[in-house]
Image 1 (cartoon, each protein chain N blue to C red):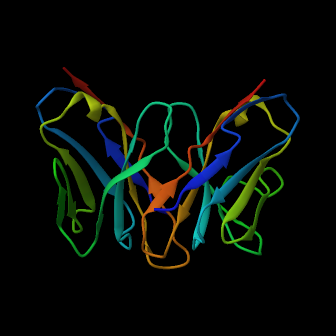
Image 2: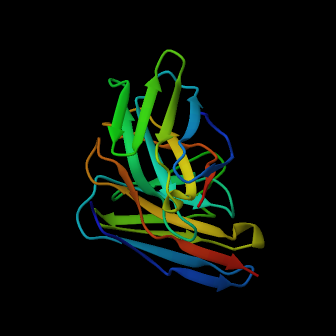
Amino acid sequence: SAVISQKPSRDICQRGTSLTIQCQVDSQVTMMFWYRQQPGQSLTLIATANQGSEATYESGFVIDKFPISRPNLTFSTLTVSNMSPEDSSIYLCSVLGDLGSPLHFGNGTRLTVT
Amino acid sequence: GENVEQHPSTLSVQEGDSAVIKCTYSDSASNYFPWYKQELGKRPQLIIDIRSNVGEKKDQRIAVTLNKTAKHFSLHITETQPEDSAVYFCAASKNSGGSNYKLTFGKGTLLTVNP
């Protein structure tokens, strides 16, 4: 399966600032997604990162708060904007190598907002 | 949209016993059902998956069964070992081979295997 590198692995940020998380895959992948995992909770899909076009957001998530880029088939970024303590979570990049293949996750970014 | 219910939320077993985790889904169009294991502080890792054209799949001590009519699927772990202790997530999706693929997760089961 693809090797997924996500950074930073963790960060502590102040309220009102923004953080950009990067996801780099070692091979071209069909689809890339961003998930959020709040402490002790399940995984919630934020959006599908579409190559060369705007991301597709799930209900409850908006582009102004979570802008996403995907300039090519191996790289994506997620920005968490104007952060508040409620944004403290683990953010996970995930990829599908080929349509019909399993979804694999990066190691995640543990974000704490103070 | 799809809704996945997972039970139990916690499960404690003795080493060597079997463990069963059950999930139900709401969307009859869902056709792909993976299971992920997440150890503390680590990423979720796929342990087994099943597609809707199959009723059961086995991989060593792990098996998954699917009942499409009842819209439920289960994870079975036999001869449990302490290293099986983790949170397990079930998930469901449709269009597993299509461009609007979306995976919906259950809330997770914390499995503890006591030596």
